[in-house]
Image (tube, rainbow, N blue to C red; front, side, top):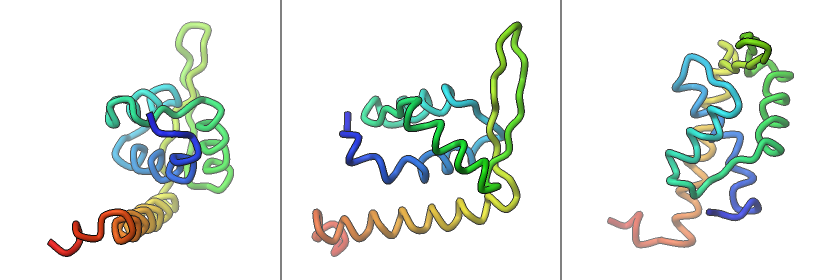
Length: 112
């Protein structure tokens, strides 16, 4: 598993990417999807996930829908139309960042 310090800056783009590929997801579902896709290397805690989701909701990037399951309420998150533009920007930014890191840590990979 990667350290919290290493993954901290990538959590928002990861969350946005998953939500952009789905109609809607709830918090626990997001954490489990990330864990499955990364084979357990990235584990998003609730303490890291929900502040990001709430901030994105407040910024108008995400919408929420409450669904009652028995006595429990499940809050689903989905991308707004204006949020799609933000996701494109964040995806481009993270991809550029990955290329930049590759220049430092694996320069021969880009030469091929």
